[in-house]
Image (cartoon, rainbow over all chains, first blue to last red):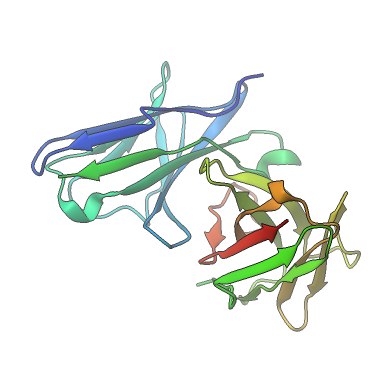
Length: 116
Length: 116
């Protein structure tokens, strides 16, 4: 059973460009979370999605950031018109629908975004 | 809102010795989960151990054990027989117990170095 897959591992963008980060959850998992990690900091929650639904986006910046988890395909975190302050590691986690196991989140290896 | 505090930015331990990492949290919730995650240089977030707040018995996983003090809102991690592969950032995390899935709240981490 493959783990949570994130790509790309590293992404370099110039200011003003768009960044698209992809996350494929573990097989059988229907819940996806996105977190951001700034240098020397812990992970901060951004958004929680189920298939075709945003459940909680309380951690998402109000502008330029969006997320989706379509019926088919990976979850996408999209950052428009990137700025230097967006440089960070972005982690995706997934959890199953199972009532007992759903409190365990399994993480991908992250995408490191560098904005020049 | 919940907060998680890790007061030790860095620690070191000799190989084969025991080390304890501190974590305190603040919450008004009565039911919740606590976690320790390990982040080695590869950046992958790896679940080390999980504690359910309604269980008084401290969780253990091989060389890893916790000291959970609910009244004091303290959740320390003890690593016995430290190995070089334990060198990593360690993050303490909190999750509300809810009917649905809820996001993790992380501390800022403790960088642990195991010295040969």
